[in-house]
Structure formats: structure tokens, C-alpha cells
Length: 220
Image (cartoon, rainbow, N blue to C red; front, side):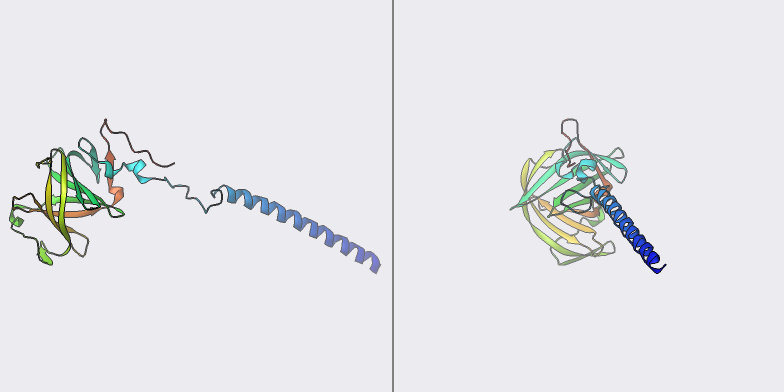
């Protein structure tokens, strides 16, 4: 009797061990298939909502030019003219925007190295007396500190009100909340263009190229 029980126990143990191996193999195959569908060959996990290139969906601000349409916070503007600046190896652009209501703004586009978009509005006549140079400028309830200054060469395309090329002196100020204040002096006029800037999030800007410009092709 004892021998029979021992035999049965031994046989039952073998069956359990065999079943455990089968289950382990099945689980391994299931995890392998699931893992393979979410990983690149030899790489890490893949974001299923990743587009590969934001500019492919929203247009490339670096390629803006006269005739293009820019949508900022659901408001559409036409690019009437563009200024392209160069100071040594540093380059940036400013685009003159106009809308159906007659609002006239400027959009600056700079990569240093990350893309930065700033929407500029001209200061009113009561603030045109402001002068650049001090380390700190207090205006309209904000304190701006001098960030950078210099002189750059520019080229003008389309309707900007400026000559096709020339030089500009500039003083750029920044407030603690990232608001901007800019002074630009073109040529030898001795007059400063004063503007207030607001940094835009990339998702707030959509670019619609003109018919003559090929759309940006993004990465798959």
C-alpha cells in the first residue's frame, strides 16, 4: 500500500512539472510577441503617437516668406514681408504679418539651438521716447533686464518698408515672466523701433505655405 501511494505521488509530481514547463513556454511566446510589436529592432519602446516631425504637421516657421499664411491662436495672418538677419554665424528672421482687421505684427523666428517664436507688437506713441542702453528698463508695470545687444546685417524681401539690405543695431531685454522688449535702429536714421514681444508655444503656430512653395516633408 505504501509503495502504491509513493508511485502515485511520484507520477503526479512529474505531471505537474511537465504542465509547468508548458505554461512557462506559452507565457514566454506571448511576451515575445507583445514586446516585438512595441519595439524597434534593437531599440527601445516606441511612442505609438509619435509623428517624427512637428514641422510636417504644422509647417516649418524657418521657411516662412512673403505670401505664406500664419495662423496664431486661431487668428490668420498674411506674411507681407520678411527680414533676414546675420551677425557672424548667428542668423534669425522677422516676418511682417497683416490680417483682415488691419493688425500689423512681427513674428521673429530663431534657432539657438532650439526653435523660438516671438510675436511682436509695436509700442504706442506714448512709449516711443524710450531709449536703449541701461541695464534695466521699467515700463508698463514690468522690469526688463538687458539680455543682449549688437549689430547685424539684414536683407529685406517683400513689403517691409526698408531698403533691400542694410545694417541694424539692436538691444533686447527680457522680463522675469519671459516677456520681451526690443529696440531696433535701422541704418543711420537715429530712430529706435520699440516693440513688446510674447514668446509663443510651437503648438500655437500653424504655417500654410503659398502655392509656389513646396510643403516640408517630415520624417515617417
